Length: 176
Image 1: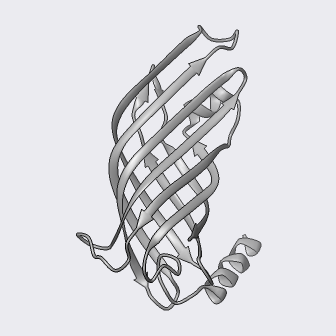
Image 2: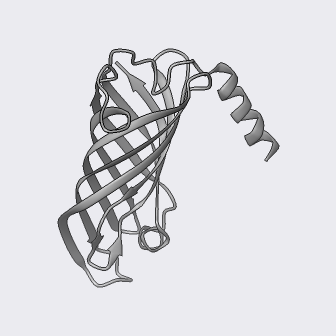
């Protein structure tokens, strides 16, 4: 706990003053890190963590309904024990600075998701299913020096073949 508190203090101390990265004019961004699916999905893959990557375009000069708008693609995958879960979300997201001095921001988005579940392990009946659905996301971020930010979020996706594919994501965001 003490280590986590010191890490947070260091991030706030070295964070930049501009919210949502150093993108005063907007542009492309790339994000990557880990994905933590819900418990049922983790049990199927026998793996607590998956991977997460995102690509987006934002325009900080424009103002959406409540914040800086962006269009994004989030991709998550977890695999293990012969099984695989994947989700792809296309979303419109807005981020709002909570504090310009610390660079903390919140965001929310909605869009369309595609998910796939492949079960091939001997412990389960073989199945492969995919579908499109409605999705949503919520994010909490911290801008850092330069063109980087740290971001954590929750991606709500649909149930596929009896498996929920929603979960948490977190990692580093780099603006170009």
